[in-house]
Length: 124
Image (cartoon, rainbow, N blue to C red; front, side, top):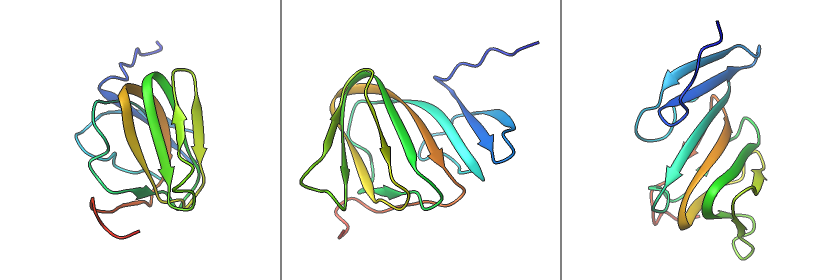
């Protein structure tokens, strides 16, 4: 039997051996795995942190609805704005922040197991 998965409350962990397990989504940043975490996120306000970084690999974002702005530390004057059907790949090791232009739902593929967040207002 192929199980149905509701991505509104579930994340998928894709391990390096390509085994996939589903787990309930918890508040806050996803628990990182040695591989990728795939999830569907709805944002109505800017990220609650001042940036994040993924040293293990590139992160992919794909907007389903709404509009987002992604700002990277190495290109702060050239943010990318994304609407429905658009996405971006954030390079490994790039500190970045996601801002909401209009409430948005997006799919992310986030590498792990390492990563970090910084407090809002922290120096870049």
